[in-house]
Length: 113
Ligand SMILES: C[S@@+](CC[C@H](N)C(=O)[O-])C[C@H]1O[C@@H](n2cnc3c(N)ncnc32)[C@H](O)[C@@H]1O
Image 1 (cartoon, rainbow, N blue to C red):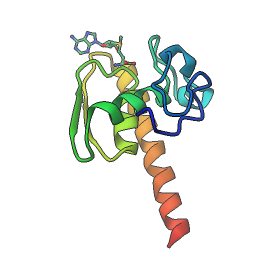
Image 2: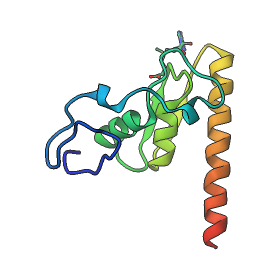
Image 3: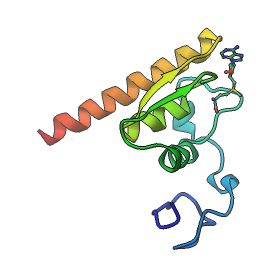
């Protein structure tokens, strides 16, 4: 992780570990496009956690998934994901985020072909 390229982290110095998770800031507006969760984390932070703690193809379970930022990071990094939440409104936000991600990835693929 310390050798990775993390342009969004303004405190990180090349070749050194990250200095503070708070340097990642708050979730970007686009990440809250379908509604927000009160404790929503930035996608960049979850990507780093997923990369540091799992391998491609692993299955990640978040039994308190909220708006599923962990799941979005998992999907983007080639991991499988199961999210659970008791609140339908957060699951609706999660589903919309996944649907949009899927559309964007399909469009990107279609442009390459
Ligand atoms: C602190 S949020 C975590 C959100 C997300 N994992 C994150 O890191 O951004 C906790 C979530 O757990 C959900 N929750 C609370 N009790 C639960 C239960 N018994 N089973 C499943 N989800 C639950 C809440 O609705 C809430 O969305």
